[in-house]
Image 1 (cartoon, one colour):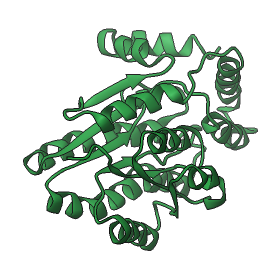
Image 2: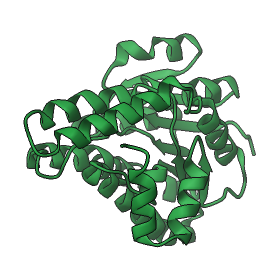
Image 3: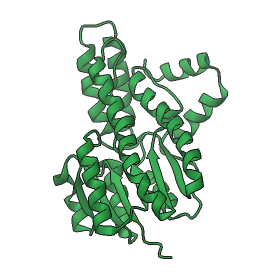
Image 4: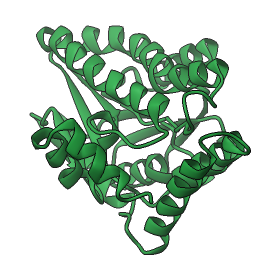
Length: 274
């Protein structure tokens, strides 16, 4: 059996997703990168991959994207659910519309696309669903209620899905990145600051933004390649692990969350944003 796989990756226009796509193409796999910004995926096409325009919250685009891969390749071996973003701000400051959008992208869009792919994987008797979660699926940070809610949900959703799909020889893998050097933080911070202006959480928002920017400026983040290497290992392994962890702060933060009390963890987290 050939080790070359047909892979569909969402959120492939930048950051971790683009890095994954390029490496997997280089390894000889057939890779379809999906994202809203097709123009940002020209490097994938130049490398021999394929670009799909897809907003994961758009059902028609998800259906059309999967249909195209099946028509052109006859199968999908691996689905990498990587698309996601973070809405940060106090619960009082974030509109319910923004909160729903956070869940639409990070959970419901991901689930919709997965549901579209699974019948094909069951028919071929094999497959892998790789969900990019976060250390934020196991820990928490100030002003991150809605983001952490989606990642905690993704952890539980993935565990249940793993049990459901085991009889069909389909693996479900969770990737838990720490702090990674991407545009993720930039997209998160300014809206958080804007929401807090003049309100009771403005001081906390400025502290969180300052601590985040300081961490990135001091190099306290890992390159996307550390996550790409984990994903590559999972893709190419005949028996992948259920979870992979990498990136700055991920292992120590998750270790502390598991072994210290809630109050102690609260103090440790807040000590970083004063």
